[in-house]
Length: 407
Image (tube, rainbow, N blue to C red):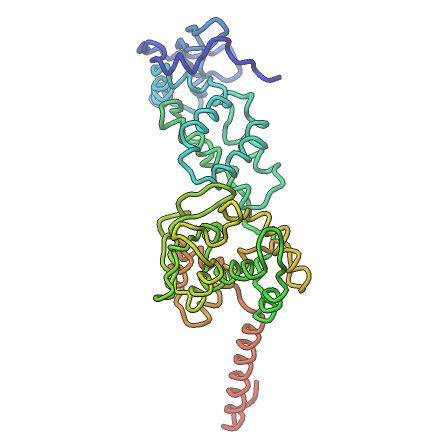
């Protein structure tokens, strides 16, 4: 049955200074009236009750006499007393984990980008609070977190997110002096890394059919939809970066666009990272972007609707991109504008760019992320295999012509 929280506010009690620190040095005792004798101490500890804070004497086992020397018992005692003599840290473990979540959502979560805030809040409300909200911080241990991760019917990436969010809650609690122990998430494992949805890119022919089939909708015109896709393909931009483009970001003379901001479901903010702020060569697409806008001010969004704001990426996916992809036969689970960003990373390297150049163009923080985005085109892979077979055949023919025995 869930433990009820104390009627007095333990959080405010700790904020105001907490208990008066009392240094204790209890004697190590031995209990011998049991099957295996063991060392123990009986210090006074702080306990949160409905009436307030009370000091209660507790027996704390240190170890069995037949497995531990007195010197080792003294070391174990010291480790316990460091925490006990700091009453604030001892009491912080009795704070309801739901309060620790509140402290995190008020103090740390607002510092993240809007997309991350939305994702983290979803995990907290739907998974973390229902599982641990009624427990004390000290009860949310490694085993409890591991069981939650194991039970979650999530992909590896989602399980990793779940663990990392719980870890962030404990990290924030430690930073403000509410947690003295090790982060319990350190030993939690997410299992073998796997992906739920296959990462695929369209062929050049599939892309051409898709662009030709894009329709006029209430969300945007067919031309605007094509330009959104082309910016992702040619510039390698994230969908939030494409929607955040303003007329002043386009230089028709230098044929470039500059990524300065992102638009995510009504929120205008900075790009995902510093490496995401970048200038990209986009060729003749620069002039086409400005032409479709007509009369404009530098601060006008390129794909603004009647109210001046860009469309929602979910509406674009549901009403424009997915139906068109299904119509031309290139749709698959996980298809979206991000597929064209992967296409940019892949084609760029096929055109001769190094992985480092592809990383900078995509605005990735690491080459390893660029590697995950790089896909092998089926036709190109077939050319690789045919080339290897041809080389093998030539080698075998040379060996045969030299009088060597064919393998």
